[in-house]
Structure formats: structure tokens, C-alpha cells
Length: 403
Image 1 (tube, rainbow, N blue to C red):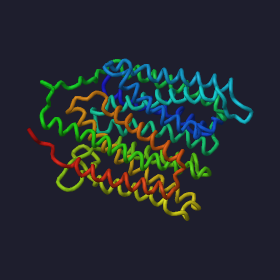
Image 2: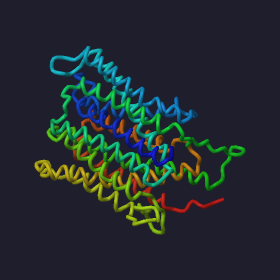
Image 3: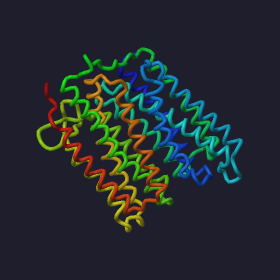
Image 4: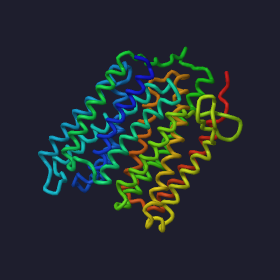
């Protein structure tokens, strides 16, 4: 089986996994009736992805790609376990609390960790195959999420209850695991860590390693001020709720499918900031600074302008634009990170980058939610993170040659 067919199978696996996961995310937000566990599935999503990073380092480190097959299968089994807990402990209003509620929340975190891991490992597997691979695989993931969230928002899901959705999710994760098995049978894309002679590495290696960490931090900062703040915004405006999430995932799905057709890559150049290019040859470039400025302006307009809250479609349009340009930037920086990972010979570099983002997102979500940050305080956070990010982006475009 060639790499192209394996990429298609990975994308389809992401589509199935995201459809079930998006439904669980949308329906499970308010299902846990415990005062110290609010936002249910949304908090479990962020904590679960942080747990996924621990599994990536503690369990999967040094293991071959064959171990990847079982991640989606374990996610499927965890959804079946959630189904059993929910049936056993649900209240008359459809919520779940008490000791069963705590167990449900913990297993939900585990379920999202497997969901996160299977998703990022699919993108990581083909990060160096083509500049189209990550946008295609991620685009189908977001497409599956938007389909499920859209059906929930329009109340068109044939399965109305959370119990039915958990069963569908278990089936979808199982199908994704089957597609992973087929796609991985003949793939051997593992990388071995670089060895440093006498404990010392060349100057260029050290500089490139520093740039790798700067790029990861830039990715984390952008995710916090865009994705996490928008999710917090959705929570503070409950009447928009799922529609804001749907608009965000629609935007990232659209840029993902565009990138799957054209390809997206990060290109350093003369000047202050790098460019993000469509195409491989090198294609048409857009300043990374301009891309991220458009996204942050959209986020700030949402936080600053109280008048906009009265205009449903204006809010959704700004969310869409913020997500679109954020994801465009993300695909560019992921291309840069994967190329650095190849040079440094770091294994699963894209998956680990997503993991660091998950930890930053989880901490940010807890801070925003439990300290009850208002729109004004959130906008200050956005501006601070944006300024730090721009400073780091300047250094990413500097030459790394040295002896």
C-alpha cells in the first residue's frame, strides 16, 4: 500500500473519529451535575489531551508505529464504558452526579486522551510525506467535528440521548481503528533520536533545537488566545454555545481542505517575519505576521464590542474568520516544526507539539473559567500573549547557521 492511500485512510479514520467525538463534546457539556466539575465534556477534552501527552512520553516512547493501532480501539472501549456508567447513574433530567458522576468524568478524560492521541498520531505519521498531508488529515477531522456539531445545533441527530451518542462514538472509534490497522500494515516511518558525541552537539543543532521550542511556544500561545478564549467566549454566551463551536470548526475544516488541495508550508525569508506559502514550488506567500494579526483582531472585536453580541451572524462570522486564519497559521508552523523535527531526528514531533498545546490549553481553560475572567480581562490576556508570540516569530525568521 503506498503512502498516498495510507494518507487517505488516515484522513477517513479522522473523519469517523471526529464525528463521534464531536457529538460527545457537544452533548456532554452540561451533563455532569457537580459544582466543581463545570463545562463537563469541554474540561474533560482539555484535561484528556494533556493526559494524552503523558501517554505519548511515558507509554509510547520508543515503541513502533504498531502501537498506534490500539489507541483508537481503546478509545472505542472507553466510550462503551461511558455508556454503561451513564445508563447506571443518569438522573431523571439526563444529568449524572455523585460518585458515578466523578467516575464518568474521569473516564471521559481517558476517552478524550485516546481520541486526541489517535488524531495527532495520524497527522504526525505523514507530516514529512507532503505539505498537503497534515491539512488533508486535519481537515477531515474538523469536517467530522463540524458535521456532528452542526447536526446537534440544528437538532437533526437521529440519536437524541447521550447514551445513544456514546454507542455511536464507540462504533465510530472502532471503524477508525480498523482504518488505522489497514493503513499502518506496510508503513515504517519511525525516526531514531539523534545521538550527541561526548554529550555535545554542534552549534547549529543547538540553535535549531532552540528554534524548535520557540516554534512550539508560538503554536501554544496562538492556540490559547484564539481557540481557548473563543471557547471561553462561547461559555459566557450560552445562547450561542454550540453554534460558536460549530463556526470555529467549520473555519478550520475549510482551510484544512484548501490546504489539502494546494499545500501549506512555512518559508523563512529576508525581512522581519516568515511567510506562509500555498503550494510547494514555493507558491504564493502571505506574511505570517499579517495572518496572525487578522485572527487576533477578530478575537478582540468579539471581546471588546458589546454591540456585536446582539448580532448572531456577526458573531459567527468573526469566529469563523478568527479560526480560519488561526488554522492557516497553525498549518504553516506545523510544517516548520515537522521540518525541524526531521533535521533534529525527534520522533513524533507533531504529536508532541499538539500535546504541549493541550497542556497550555487545559491550564488556560481552568484559569479563565474558575477565576471567572470577564471579556475585558480576557482581552488583556490576548494582547499579552500576542505580543510575546510576535517577538518569538521574529527570532524564528533569523538564520541558524553556525559552527
